[in-house]
Length: 155
Image (cartoon, rainbow, N blue to C red):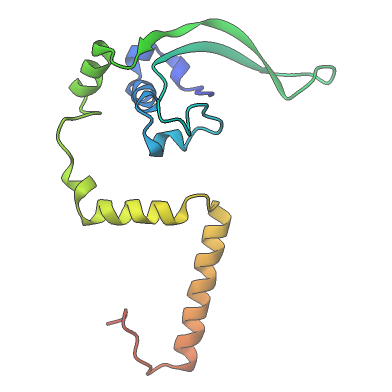
């Protein structure tokens, strides 16, 4: 995983990165699906340890294979286990993880967004926008030919 902005500070200064590590270790579905080749994706037991290394990436020249090469710089984050209390305290202090469920997540909008996410999972942006555009065109043509027809979603 490449996170070029994370390297501008330490892992302690990067709540997004630590939140990502936490959710990967928790096997959170929405986060795991962001990772292209996540080895623990279909396992019942999520990963138990995580560490991060910092690499410097360079474009290759014409004589080298591939688009870029990388050089190891240093350890970015030491090994954390799944129940690391310092990590949990850090994320709790910054309200990234909480003990109580959010009203937004369990409310009507949160439920709708989860359903929408499940329906559109695996659909690339172009296909989604193309389908939506076709829907709008068909709706406009329908209204053109049937201007006084009952439309249940219009006032």
